[in-house]
Figure 1 (spheres, rainbow, N blue to C red):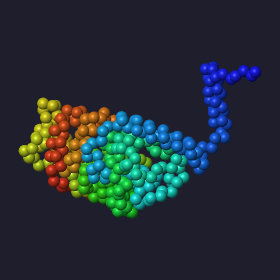
Figure 2 (figure 1 turned 90 degrees about the vertical axis):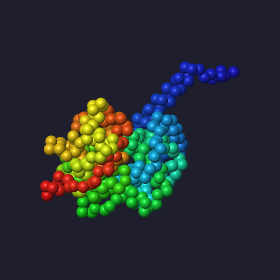
Figure 3 (figure 1 turned 90 degrees about the horizontal axis):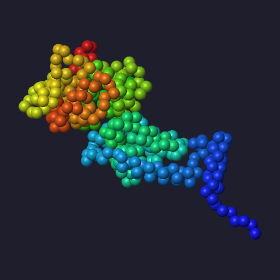
Figure 4 (figure 1 turned 180 degrees about the horizontal axis):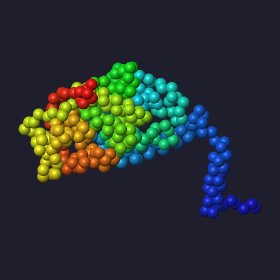
Length: 359
């Protein structure tokens, strides 16, 4: 009588070790075809997709709760130009429904027709912020920028219902064939540097030195922004200076603020001595000793100013030039931020930037 085969812990361990060695030898031999043209086996594609879905839904619990105004027009508008530049060539858009690159990737980037029904806002935020391994989906360049990540999540939720005409209006921007570099900026900021909503700051008439410093900080990564760091990537420094000069030379922001009797005016003109907060106008207003590296605020969008100050309160500055303002913002109560932002937004937009005056 033949002895029966018994599974023992030692034999099980030997079997697992043998399979591991066999897998290593097969991989080391080079016979495994990793070419994207071969695609995945169905079971491989299924397994990877299931693991990805479960992982996203688990780690989405760590994402911040979206704000009540997540799906606002400004949030959707804010991410539209970046989507056209950085995402549409893989995922498609209402203007390009079948991008040729996507058909030759393994795995193929998914279409986004039902993205709002498939993923919650927090799950979309998780995917946008951290990307997906073993695919072409990158992580967000500046993952600490919750505002940008959430704006992209809002845009993705709105995309399936967007007509080609609406998409073109939001994402493509004006054509500037004689100046392709300016066309990249105009997609979001307009040729005139204006801001028709709260999605983007007004650039027209801004200090040329401030704009040039900001663009260089984005290029070096010392001012984090997944949108702006991508936009200026590879742009030569002389071109950044030229763009700063162009927008500074337009009519828009100014250094002149008209005082009124609101709390915001009192903070702007006199500061908050009890909080060790100096007057905003001492740096951002009209002064013979004013540093041109400080931005003009008169006429700027209130939502942009408030959001910028709140980020300064929360984030550690990477740019040494911003360190002083971050310390001041940390001392500002939230109600003071809203008040001073509203004060500057009420100021008339007028005057010419330094570049125009020099011409």
